[in-house]
Image (cartoon, rainbow, N blue to C red; front, side, top):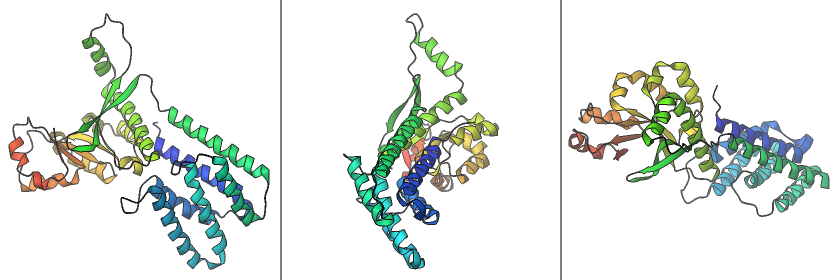
Length: 332
Protein backbone atom coordinates (compact mmCIF):
# COMPACT_ATOMS: atom_id res chain seq x y z
CA UNK A 1 0.00 0.00 0.00
CA UNK A 2 1.27 3.48 -0.82
CA UNK A 3 1.83 6.22 1.76
CA UNK A 4 0.19 9.63 1.86
CA UNK A 5 2.99 11.97 2.95
CA UNK A 6 0.83 15.06 3.46
CA UNK A 7 -1.65 13.22 5.68
CA UNK A 8 1.21 11.80 7.75
CA UNK A 9 2.86 15.21 8.12
CA UNK A 10 -0.38 16.89 9.19
CA UNK A 11 -1.13 14.12 11.69
CA UNK A 12 2.36 14.52 13.12
CA UNK A 13 1.74 18.27 13.43
CA UNK A 14 -1.52 17.65 15.30
CA UNK A 15 0.23 15.25 17.67
CA UNK A 16 3.03 17.79 18.15
CA UNK A 17 0.68 20.67 19.06
CA UNK A 18 -1.43 18.44 21.30
CA UNK A 19 1.67 17.40 23.26
CA UNK A 20 2.75 21.04 23.66
CA UNK A 21 -0.70 22.01 24.92
CA UNK A 22 -0.80 19.19 27.44
CA UNK A 23 2.60 20.25 28.78
CA UNK A 24 1.41 23.82 29.17
CA UNK A 25 -2.11 23.28 30.54
CA UNK A 26 -1.74 19.91 32.31
CA UNK A 27 -5.10 19.08 33.96
CA UNK A 28 -6.68 22.24 32.49
CA UNK A 29 -6.17 20.94 28.96
CA UNK A 30 -9.50 20.89 27.14
CA UNK A 31 -9.78 18.47 24.24
CA UNK A 32 -13.08 20.07 23.30
CA UNK A 33 -11.51 23.45 22.56
CA UNK A 34 -8.26 21.94 21.31
CA UNK A 35 -10.20 20.10 18.58
CA UNK A 36 -11.97 23.29 17.47
CA UNK A 37 -8.80 25.40 17.39
CA UNK A 38 -6.82 22.61 15.77
CA UNK A 39 -9.28 22.20 12.91
CA UNK A 40 -9.32 25.94 12.22
CA UNK A 41 -5.52 26.11 12.37
CA UNK A 42 -4.96 23.17 9.99
CA UNK A 43 -7.62 24.44 7.58
CA UNK A 44 -5.75 27.72 7.23
CA UNK A 45 -2.11 26.65 7.63
CA UNK A 46 -2.17 23.64 5.31
CA UNK A 47 -5.35 23.85 3.24
CA UNK A 48 -5.30 27.63 2.79
CA UNK A 49 -9.06 27.81 3.39
CA UNK A 50 -11.04 31.04 3.87
CA UNK A 51 -10.82 33.93 1.45
CA UNK A 52 -8.65 36.83 2.41
CA UNK A 53 -6.83 39.82 0.97
CA UNK A 54 -3.82 38.53 -0.99
CA UNK A 55 -1.69 41.19 0.69
CA UNK A 56 -2.43 39.62 4.07
CA UNK A 57 0.31 37.36 5.41
CA UNK A 58 -0.42 33.78 6.46
CA UNK A 59 0.52 34.78 10.00
CA UNK A 60 -2.09 37.56 10.07
CA UNK A 61 -4.71 35.33 8.48
CA UNK A 62 -4.22 32.63 11.14
CA UNK A 63 -4.18 35.08 14.06
CA UNK A 64 -7.29 36.95 12.89
CA UNK A 65 -9.27 33.75 12.37
CA UNK A 66 -8.22 32.28 15.71
CA UNK A 67 -9.15 35.50 17.50
CA UNK A 68 -12.58 35.53 15.83
CA UNK A 69 -13.06 31.87 16.74
CA UNK A 70 -12.11 32.60 20.36
CA UNK A 71 -14.74 35.33 20.57
CA UNK A 72 -17.41 33.04 19.11
CA UNK A 73 -16.56 30.23 21.53
CA UNK A 74 -16.58 32.58 24.53
CA UNK A 75 -20.07 33.84 23.69
CA UNK A 76 -21.50 30.32 23.63
CA UNK A 77 -19.43 29.03 26.57
CA UNK A 78 -19.20 31.96 28.97
CA UNK A 79 -18.23 29.70 31.89
CA UNK A 80 -15.08 28.63 30.00
CA UNK A 81 -14.05 32.08 28.82
CA UNK A 82 -10.65 32.02 30.58
CA UNK A 83 -9.45 28.67 29.19
CA UNK A 84 -10.80 29.54 25.72
CA UNK A 85 -8.76 32.74 25.64
CA UNK A 86 -5.66 31.13 27.14
CA UNK A 87 -5.67 28.26 24.63
CA UNK A 88 -6.14 30.77 21.83
CA UNK A 89 -3.09 32.69 23.03
CA UNK A 90 -1.05 29.49 23.05
CA UNK A 91 -2.00 28.79 19.44
CA UNK A 92 -0.35 32.08 18.56
CA UNK A 93 2.94 30.50 19.68
CA UNK A 94 2.32 27.42 17.53
CA UNK A 95 3.27 29.59 14.55
CA UNK A 96 6.88 29.59 15.80
CA UNK A 97 6.99 25.80 15.73
CA UNK A 98 5.33 25.24 12.36
CA UNK A 99 7.28 27.30 9.81
CA UNK A 100 4.93 30.30 9.93
CA UNK A 101 7.09 32.66 12.00
CA UNK A 102 10.85 32.29 12.08
CA UNK A 103 12.30 32.39 15.56
CA UNK A 104 15.96 33.36 15.95
CA UNK A 105 15.88 32.30 19.58
CA UNK A 106 13.39 29.53 20.35
CA UNK A 107 14.28 29.69 24.04
CA UNK A 108 12.88 33.24 24.23
CA UNK A 109 9.62 31.98 22.76
CA UNK A 110 9.53 29.20 25.34
CA UNK A 111 10.11 31.78 28.09
CA UNK A 112 6.95 33.57 26.91
CA UNK A 113 5.03 30.28 26.91
CA UNK A 114 6.28 29.64 30.47
CA UNK A 115 4.79 32.98 31.53
CA UNK A 116 1.45 31.98 30.02
CA UNK A 117 1.65 28.67 31.87
CA UNK A 118 2.39 30.42 35.16
CA UNK A 119 -0.73 32.53 34.71
CA UNK A 120 -2.83 29.43 33.97
CA UNK A 121 -1.40 26.98 36.53
CA UNK A 122 0.45 29.28 38.90
CA UNK A 123 3.56 27.19 38.24
CA UNK A 124 7.05 28.32 37.36
CA UNK A 125 9.57 25.51 37.01
CA UNK A 126 12.68 24.96 34.92
CA UNK A 127 11.77 21.32 34.32
CA UNK A 128 8.83 22.40 32.13
CA UNK A 129 11.06 24.59 29.95
CA UNK A 130 13.61 21.81 29.49
CA UNK A 131 10.89 19.31 28.62
CA UNK A 132 9.30 21.67 26.09
CA UNK A 133 12.66 22.40 24.44
CA UNK A 134 13.37 18.66 24.27
CA UNK A 135 9.93 17.99 22.73
CA UNK A 136 10.34 20.79 20.17
CA UNK A 137 13.69 19.39 19.04
CA UNK A 138 12.33 15.85 18.94
CA UNK A 139 9.43 16.76 16.64
CA UNK A 140 11.73 18.79 14.41
CA UNK A 141 13.86 15.68 13.89
CA UNK A 142 10.78 13.48 13.33
CA UNK A 143 9.49 15.80 10.61
CA UNK A 144 12.87 16.02 8.90
CA UNK A 145 13.17 12.23 8.89
CA UNK A 146 9.66 11.86 7.47
CA UNK A 147 10.49 14.16 4.55
CA UNK A 148 13.84 12.43 3.98
CA UNK A 149 12.05 9.11 3.46
CA UNK A 150 10.64 10.51 0.24
CA UNK A 151 13.98 11.56 -1.22
CA UNK A 152 15.47 9.57 -4.08
CA UNK A 153 19.09 9.11 -5.11
CA UNK A 154 18.12 7.66 -8.50
CA UNK A 155 15.25 9.88 -9.65
CA UNK A 156 14.24 13.53 -9.68
CA UNK A 157 11.49 15.62 -11.23
CA UNK A 158 12.15 18.20 -13.91
CA UNK A 159 9.81 21.19 -13.67
CA UNK A 160 9.11 23.33 -16.73
CA UNK A 161 6.90 26.42 -16.80
CA UNK A 162 4.06 26.42 -19.27
CA UNK A 163 3.99 29.49 -21.55
CA UNK A 164 1.98 32.37 -20.07
CA UNK A 165 1.44 30.38 -16.86
CA UNK A 166 4.45 31.12 -14.69
CA UNK A 167 3.11 29.28 -11.65
CA UNK A 168 2.07 26.16 -13.57
CA UNK A 169 4.72 23.48 -14.02
CA UNK A 170 4.87 20.48 -16.31
CA UNK A 171 6.36 17.54 -14.41
CA UNK A 172 8.70 14.98 -15.96
CA UNK A 173 10.40 12.17 -14.07
CA UNK A 174 14.13 11.98 -14.79
CA UNK A 175 16.87 9.63 -13.67
CA UNK A 176 20.35 10.34 -12.36
CA UNK A 177 21.77 6.86 -12.74
CA UNK A 178 25.38 6.55 -13.86
CA UNK A 179 26.03 4.24 -16.78
CA UNK A 180 29.36 3.14 -18.33
CA UNK A 181 30.28 5.15 -21.43
CA UNK A 182 29.94 2.04 -23.61
CA UNK A 183 26.15 2.28 -23.28
CA UNK A 184 24.47 4.46 -25.86
CA UNK A 185 21.94 7.17 -24.98
CA UNK A 186 19.34 5.05 -26.79
CA UNK A 187 20.06 2.03 -24.59
CA UNK A 188 19.89 4.11 -21.42
CA UNK A 189 16.57 5.70 -22.40
CA UNK A 190 15.16 2.31 -23.34
CA UNK A 191 16.13 0.87 -19.96
CA UNK A 192 14.43 3.79 -18.21
CA UNK A 193 11.32 4.10 -20.37
CA UNK A 194 10.68 0.44 -21.12
CA UNK A 195 12.39 -1.45 -18.32
CA UNK A 196 10.66 0.67 -15.72
CA UNK A 197 6.98 0.41 -16.64
CA UNK A 198 4.80 3.52 -16.75
CA UNK A 199 2.84 2.62 -13.64
CA UNK A 200 6.01 2.29 -11.56
CA UNK A 201 7.32 5.58 -12.92
CA UNK A 202 4.08 7.29 -11.91
CA UNK A 203 4.43 6.04 -8.32
CA UNK A 204 7.88 7.63 -8.11
CA UNK A 205 6.74 10.84 -9.81
CA UNK A 206 3.68 11.24 -7.58
CA UNK A 207 5.74 10.73 -4.42
CA UNK A 208 8.32 13.32 -5.49
CA UNK A 209 5.68 15.85 -6.51
CA UNK A 210 3.76 15.36 -3.25
CA UNK A 211 6.93 16.14 -1.32
CA UNK A 212 7.47 19.24 -3.47
CA UNK A 213 3.90 20.43 -2.83
CA UNK A 214 4.30 19.94 0.91
CA UNK A 215 7.58 21.88 0.85
CA UNK A 216 5.78 24.71 -0.98
CA UNK A 217 3.10 24.77 1.72
CA UNK A 218 5.70 24.80 4.50
CA UNK A 219 7.32 27.79 2.76
CA UNK A 220 3.86 29.43 2.63
CA UNK A 221 3.66 29.20 -1.16
CA UNK A 222 0.10 28.26 -2.12
CA UNK A 223 0.18 29.40 -5.74
CA UNK A 224 2.32 26.82 -7.54
CA UNK A 225 0.49 24.25 -9.66
CA UNK A 226 1.85 20.97 -11.05
CA UNK A 227 0.59 18.97 -14.04
CA UNK A 228 1.31 15.25 -13.65
CA UNK A 229 1.67 12.42 -16.15
CA UNK A 230 -0.92 9.65 -16.29
CA UNK A 231 -1.48 6.43 -18.20
CA UNK A 232 -4.94 5.55 -19.51
CA UNK A 233 -4.44 1.83 -18.77
CA UNK A 234 -4.81 2.53 -15.06
CA UNK A 235 -8.52 3.27 -15.40
CA UNK A 236 -9.02 -0.42 -16.14
CA UNK A 237 -6.99 -1.40 -13.05
CA UNK A 238 -9.00 -0.05 -10.09
CA UNK A 239 -6.69 -1.41 -7.38
CA UNK A 240 -3.54 0.00 -8.97
CA UNK A 241 -5.33 3.29 -9.65
CA UNK A 242 -6.47 3.55 -6.04
CA UNK A 243 -2.95 2.76 -4.86
CA UNK A 244 -1.48 5.51 -7.04
CA UNK A 245 -4.09 8.15 -6.19
CA UNK A 246 -3.72 7.46 -2.46
CA UNK A 247 -0.34 9.22 -2.69
CA UNK A 248 -1.98 12.52 -3.65
CA UNK A 249 -5.36 12.04 -1.95
CA UNK A 250 -5.22 15.01 0.39
CA UNK A 251 -7.16 18.26 -0.03
CA UNK A 252 -4.04 20.43 0.18
CA UNK A 253 -2.22 18.28 -2.38
CA UNK A 254 -5.15 17.91 -4.78
CA UNK A 255 -5.61 21.67 -4.82
CA UNK A 256 -2.14 22.09 -6.31
CA UNK A 257 -1.92 19.31 -8.87
CA UNK A 258 -3.80 18.05 -11.90
CA UNK A 259 -3.59 14.85 -13.92
CA UNK A 260 -2.88 15.12 -17.63
CA UNK A 261 -5.29 13.20 -19.93
CA UNK A 262 -5.73 13.29 -23.73
CA UNK A 263 -9.11 14.44 -25.05
CA UNK A 264 -9.57 11.33 -27.20
CA UNK A 265 -9.05 9.16 -24.15
CA UNK A 266 -11.45 11.31 -22.10
CA UNK A 267 -14.22 10.83 -24.68
CA UNK A 268 -13.78 7.05 -24.46
CA UNK A 269 -13.81 7.05 -20.63
CA UNK A 270 -16.03 9.97 -19.67
CA UNK A 271 -17.69 8.42 -16.65
CA UNK A 272 -14.42 7.13 -15.17
CA UNK A 273 -12.76 10.53 -15.59
CA UNK A 274 -15.80 12.31 -14.13
CA UNK A 275 -15.65 9.96 -11.14
CA UNK A 276 -12.07 11.06 -10.52
CA UNK A 277 -13.23 14.67 -10.62
CA UNK A 278 -16.11 13.95 -8.23
CA UNK A 279 -13.49 12.59 -5.82
CA UNK A 280 -11.70 15.94 -5.97
CA UNK A 281 -8.93 15.09 -8.43
CA UNK A 282 -8.31 17.84 -10.98
CA UNK A 283 -7.83 17.00 -14.64
CA UNK A 284 -5.81 18.83 -17.28
CA UNK A 285 -7.11 17.94 -20.74
CA UNK A 286 -4.82 17.76 -23.79
CA UNK A 287 -6.79 18.62 -26.92
CA UNK A 288 -6.06 16.60 -30.06
CA UNK A 289 -7.42 16.45 -33.59
CA UNK A 290 -10.44 14.50 -32.38
CA UNK A 291 -11.75 17.66 -30.69
CA UNK A 292 -14.32 19.42 -32.86
CA UNK A 293 -14.62 22.99 -31.65
CA UNK A 294 -18.11 24.45 -31.31
CA UNK A 295 -19.93 26.30 -28.58
CA UNK A 296 -21.17 23.11 -26.90
CA UNK A 297 -17.86 21.23 -26.86
CA UNK A 298 -15.96 24.33 -25.72
CA UNK A 299 -18.36 24.73 -22.79
CA UNK A 300 -17.49 21.20 -21.61
CA UNK A 301 -13.86 22.28 -21.21
CA UNK A 302 -14.71 24.59 -18.31
CA UNK A 303 -14.71 21.66 -15.87
CA UNK A 304 -11.01 20.98 -16.39
CA UNK A 305 -8.19 22.61 -14.47
CA UNK A 306 -6.28 23.47 -17.65
CA UNK A 307 -6.77 22.91 -21.37
CA UNK A 308 -3.55 22.29 -23.32
CA UNK A 309 -3.57 23.13 -27.02
CA UNK A 310 -0.61 22.35 -29.27
CA UNK A 311 -0.11 24.95 -32.00
CA UNK A 312 0.79 22.15 -34.43
CA UNK A 313 -2.69 20.63 -34.28
CA UNK A 314 -4.49 20.46 -37.61
CA UNK A 315 -7.57 22.03 -36.01
CA UNK A 316 -5.62 24.63 -34.01
CA UNK A 317 -7.18 27.63 -35.83
CA UNK A 318 -10.65 26.18 -35.31
CA UNK A 319 -10.02 25.74 -31.59
CA UNK A 320 -8.35 29.07 -30.98
CA UNK A 321 -11.42 30.95 -32.25
CA UNK A 322 -12.98 30.08 -28.90
CA UNK A 323 -10.01 31.18 -26.82
CA UNK A 324 -12.07 33.83 -25.02
CA UNK A 325 -14.43 31.10 -23.87
CA UNK A 326 -11.60 28.89 -22.55
CA UNK A 327 -10.14 30.91 -19.67
CA UNK A 328 -7.88 28.07 -18.50
CA UNK A 329 -6.19 27.45 -21.86
CA UNK A 330 -2.44 26.78 -22.21
CA UNK A 331 -0.92 27.01 -25.68
CA UNK A 332 2.28 25.10 -26.35
